[in-house]
Image (tube, rainbow, N blue to C red; front, top):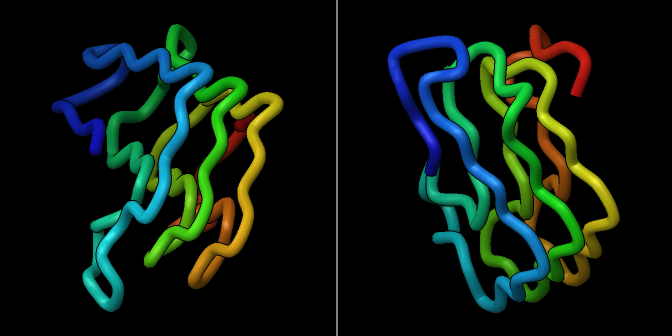
Length: 92
């Protein structure tokens, strides 16, 4: 989980990794990749990853804007694969 007090205060560059059997079933906030309430994240990205056999979603974007999610593959995911949590997230 990436979380911080505000815009651009956290930079995460997650690329070319495999996430296998990640996440915790029926546990809110326990997702393989989770950006949480940061605001703008123009310097961050999630690129070229394989997320499979996840117990709870793949990539969750909650209260963030401008995240680049590029060329990822998600397979056999419990729940939503790419999840915008509140619906207020923009330009992702």
